[in-house]
Amino acid sequence: MTSIRRRLALALCLGLGVLLLLGLGGLYWGLRGALVHQLDETLLAIAHDLEADLRRGETPMIDSAPPHSRDPRRGQRYFFQIADHEGKVLHAQGLADTAYFSPRPERRGGPVFGDIVLPQGEPGRALLLMAKSVSTAGGPLRIVVATDREALAHVLGTLVVGISVLGVALIAAIVAFVLWALRRELRPIDRLAGEAAAIDARSLDRRFRLDGLPAELRPIALRLNDLLARLEESFARERRVSSDLAHELRTPLAELRVLAESALKWPDTRDPESDRDVLAIATHMDALLSRMLLIARSEEGRIALTLETVAVDALVREVWSRLEERAQARGIVPSVAWTPLPASADRVLLRSVITNLLENAVDYTAQGGALTIAFQVENPATAVVVITNAVADLSPDEVPRMFERYWRKDAARGSGAHFGLGLALTQRFCVAMGWSIQAEMPQPGLLAMRVRGPLAAPGR
Image (cartoon, rainbow, N blue to C red; front, top):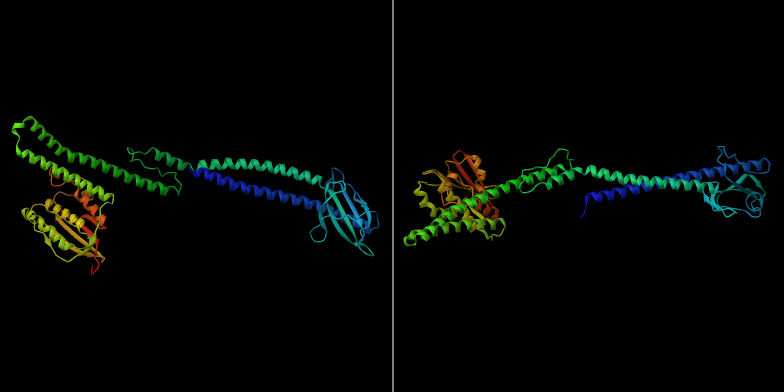
């Protein structure tokens, strides 16, 4: 499993380690260059001294520096060779006096510096200087000054050891610091993980603490808290659904049990009305389960749609014709402004939506109450159907709960005509068609159900 902590630790250690190695390497080569330059400057000073001896007509020679002096030549062996332009050795000390001795050149302008192998087979450093102030008929004399590299190699070896030890110590310190810093800076993530691990279905009321969280984690914690709030609401709704479902099934099952016990106890007095009661109870339970299955299918997106142009006003007129007698019995006369309203919808689902809304309006409107149906166009590509009816016992706080499954006013629980599933199913059907439904109370005692959908294009 990929670990952010491990990947960060590896990346930081590798990155800082490479930078450290580059820095120590640069330090080594810088110090080495400085030491070699100091040695070259010493060789050049000796060459100038030898040139001065030649100008004065003295025998050239190299004076040894006292071991404890500050002269760069202390403890160092130096050799020289002076030859004419033909390579004839005129003066020499420690170098071959029978042939011209020249280093492998590393040009730096005037003098030539280079690494050589001394006659004793030791590695050395040498300088070639053309003494223009002292010349023969054929040209200037050539002065070669050399020294062994033993002291330089010793210093460089000590430097390598010191830098290596320093590098190992710094790498260990880097690793320790990176691990400590990651453990410290990733502590909020560990805290979030611990809080998340403590949350289960029984503790959805918990929330992630925002105090002490860095700016990068606060949005995540906020989104998680929002998710927990939605989960808590969803679980509470499911618990209410289970409770309401048990309530819905308990009454008909109890009735069936009473009828069955009565039939077993008094078989000779069996009343045919009991069979009709059993059939009615079974029909009621079948309708309830059918509504539940429709809601489940709509939530899973398993409803087949056939979108077409539907004359919404004609569909409303058709549905109302079947409810008109029931409405007249309750003294309800609708106020309708019949306006053509073509919309894109599934005819079967839209009929179910309109039927459920009009049935609710007829059944829950007070005796002789007002009922209004309006057809509107918005935006200008949205078809709107507004069904408004008078309600006596509904508060604005209860309106958002109307689309919850099994929600009904307590006074209506005793009625078998409604299950509390109609509006939930209506909302699912609207969503499946790409429509929307909204419940609102424009004024106290008046409920408006507003259904919106795409207006059909002309000519369709």
